[in-house]
Amino acid sequence: MMAMLHELIGTQGQDIGVLQMSLRAVLIFILGLLIVRFAATRAFGKWSALDIILAVIVGSNLSRAITGSAPFLPTLTATILLVGLHGLLARASARWSWLSTLTKGRSVSLAMDGVLDEAAMKKAGLGPGDLRMALRAAGYDDVSEIRSASLERNGDITIIGR
Image (cartoon, rainbow, N blue to C red; front, side, top):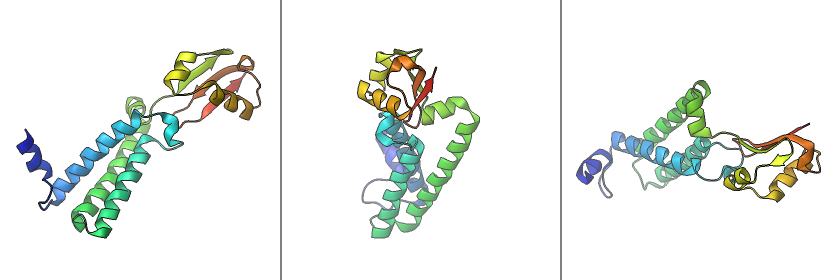
């Protein structure tokens, strides 16, 4: 199994070709997407997991191409492939809701009809202070004054009044 993997993606110290570098890029992209997707939504602000992974990998790839620590053309090819993959996934996510949920997450209901869902808050990594801040920003003093509060996919908390 390991020999086949080494053949597909190359090993450290050997020349890695365009296809091997591209396969490495796709594998790292998918792994990074999964890692970021399962991290706390608010940890990354307004960026989607797709955007974060693309920025990190492209930055890393380009720096390696600049410093010469990776072959120039295969690294650029892999980077262009990732940018294309990002665009395809973004467009596909707009078309298919299941893929959008997988790549971008879903909103979480934090309060409904003035009743706080503490389990949802805890699961989303939010404390009472986070919700109080969002309430104040929306012009409310207390959760009893609202119809709903939701943690959106981009990390914002949306408040809807009664």
